[in-house]
Length: 381
Image (cartoon, rainbow, N blue to C red):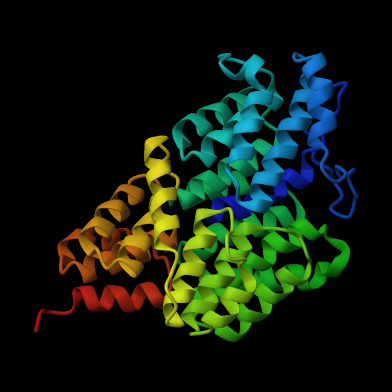
């Protein structure tokens, strides 16, 4: 899963479709508690929708419940169920706005960013004040490394959602320290009044900012604050696992991730922890999952596969190919790190030129990327 999955937490918080209007709703007051779906809501909704498959309100509600489950559990099958719920309108050139927003969300999950942005542009042409479309557009642009455009979309938002969106964009474009402090103060002031989903999002963003600054103590605090909220979130578990692996705390990763997690990314982290502890990692299971993704034509797992080939198999050339393919689609700090590491391991510093130029152009600050860049720029001995 990518950072995008984490940033879209806010969408599931604020999407409260009305059966009457089928319009997503963004409250003006962050402290407002919205209705939450009960445990296992899908079966009842699915039954009702099967009896009335063109009921837009039911379809939107069911699709959103599946998208929320996919985010929480890291299981992409739920996204397929969400698309099925929207099937009466899926192929329409101009479907209702709620379908456009959800279709954009599902398309970005498959890394079809161009189609997702086209859907969102259509929403904003019809409803320029649509906050949810603005947020979704902003986070897709962030994943693509288009930070100036993302910041423009963030300006249409409000409160902590706006603060987190803007701080993330600014932190990736040369203003890391100021962005971190501004966002930290914003959440400190809000305290527990903000919805837990927004606090989880913000604390995860703060943790990753702190990591890029080289401040492990603060990163740990933010990660633990997010985990203490008790909300299921596969991205958070993966990000904290990466932090623990970097701190040589692999035993804690095994405590955090069960033996057979559904998400490929979490299985990868567990395998990395097992290798670090001298245990045989689950290579066959990972190989089977990545092969299945390739058969489906699913490119969303290329980053994880590149890391698998580099760190567990030692196949630097294969990892470099996958990392470069991923870089053509998305440009998150992890994507840059993986490509630089693969270029070093393969002995091909020229393969990293585009990333090095991009880092200079954006002003992205990350102590780990800076160390890798210095090694790549160093003259061969």
